[in-house]
Length: 577
Ligand code: ATP
Image (cartoon, rainbow, N blue to C red; front, side, top):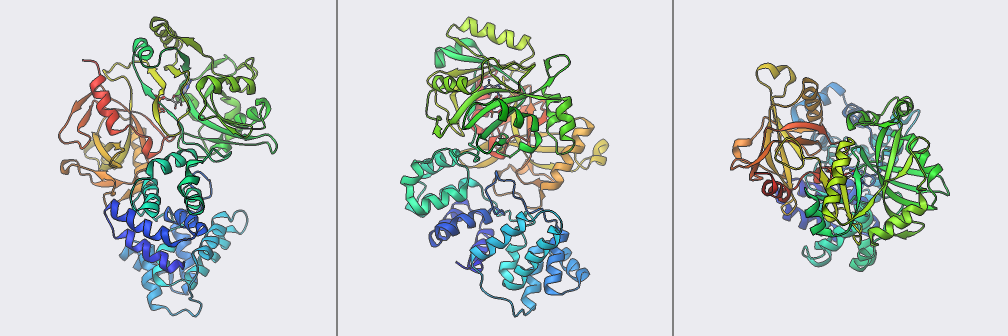
C-alpha cells in the first residue's frame, strides 16, 4: 500500500470520535495490508517504528523538524514559523506549504519505503546524526504529497496522538478476522505474553487465530506483569486460597529480568515495560555472575541497601537510584539488592502455566539459597508455607514491625497470569491511619490554573481518575487541591506541561462540573492516600476520595495499571465502618 493511502486512513481516524467507528476503520485498513505492512503500520499509528518497550525514540524536537521542512521546501524560516504559530500545528502548516509547492521529486512511496527511512532516522546516533536526521526527513517531505506530509512530520515529533489505545488495535484485529470483538480474549491473552502489537498483527496475518493461541514468551520481549488482589486478614486469605506461600512484601520497585548467558545480555524492565537496564548496572552484573541458567525470565523487587549498616532503605531512598545521570556513583552509594520471587521462563521452556510450587522449585535451582545481601545482589525471597490464619497474622505483624509493607500470600497451585490481577497472589498491607486498606493509583487527567498562593505555580488543583476496563475510559474520583509540598506542585506542573492538550481526550468521561482549565493526555500516574471513599454524584467513577494526599508519582505504572472502576467500588465496600 502507498503511504498516501495510509495518510487518508490517518485523516479518517483523526476525524472520528467514536471508538467503535475507529475500530472498524482500522479493521478495514488492516484487511488491505500484507503481514509486513500491518506490523509497520501499527507502529506508525502509535508514532513509532518499534514496539513501545523498545528504546528506539526519534529524539527530534519541533525546531529540528521545522529545520528539515524549510530546507526541503527552500522557504523562509520566519515565514513558516509565523504560519505555524497561526495554525498551531507543524503538520497542518507543512501541508499548506506543500499544496502550493511543486516538487519534481514528488512520487508515490510505499509504506515500507517510508517506514525504513523513519527507522533509519530513529536509529541514527552519534556524530553527525542530527544532520542525518534532518536529511532523511527533508527527503521524505520533498517526495511525499501534502496530506502525507501532515502525518509524516507528526511522527518524529511524538504528535501522532490519534486518540486510541492498544486495546482498540486488538479489537480491530478481531474485527479484521470475523467482523466482531469475538476474538478479543484470545488476542489480548497473546498480547499480555508478547506485548508487541506489530508482532501480533504479523502473526494473525500469517497464522490466523490458531497462531495467536500458541504464543509463548520470548526473551527480551517483556511480559505484562501479574498483579495481586488485596485482603486484610489472615482468615480471609486462608478462606480464599488455603495453604499458601507467604513472602515479605518489599517496598522497592519491581523488575522483570531477561538474561541470555551465551551473550551475557541482561535487560531489566519496569512495571510499565520500560527498558531500564542502563540505570542499574549493579543488578545487571549481579545477574550475570549469580544466575545459573542458559536463558531466563524472572522477577523480583529491587531495594536500596546501606552497605555500612547492612540495612535496607525505605522506598524514598531506593527511588534515588531511578536516574539518568551519575548512575555509577549512585550505584556505589546505594547498591540495589534484588529479592527474587518469580520465574516465568527458563532454558527454552515457558513456566507461566506451571504451578507456583513448580516455578519456585526451579527458581531455587537457578539462584542459590545461600545468597546473602552482604555478598550478593540476587537473593531468593524467603517464604513460609502457612495454613493457619493466626500464624499468617503473626507473620504479617512481624513483617510490619520489621519495617516492611506487609506480606504477599501465593496460591500454591496458582499459575502466572500475565497482565491479570487475580487471587493467585494476595497482598495484605499495613493498614494506614485511614479506613481504606490500600492506596489508590490514579491517572492525572487535567488541572486548574492556580489561584491565591499558588498563582506562582500555575496549578491550583488537578483532576484524577480511575480506569473503567469495560468501557476503556477514565472516570474521575477526585480533584486534588491540597496535600502536596511546594516542590511536588512544581513537579506536577512541569509534568502536566509536557502532556497538556486543548481538547479533552476521547477516553475521558467527565461530569460538566469537573471540567478543568487544561487537559492532560494519559501519562502521569500518581499514588493517592485518602481517608475514606464516599459515594459521589459529581464524579463519573461514582465515588470520591476524601482528604486525598499525594504519596508518590508512579512512573513505573502505565495508564491502564491505575486502580480500576470495579476496584474502587470494592475498596468502598470493604473499608472499615
Ligand atoms: P499492583 O497491585 O498493581 O501490582 P502496586 O505496586 O500498587 O501495584 P502493591 O500494593 O505495591 O501494588 O503490591 C504488588 C507489588 O508488590 C508487586 O508489583 C511488587 O512490586 C511488590 N512486591 C513486593 N514483594 C513482593 C513479593 N514477595 N512477591 C510479589 N510482589 C512483591
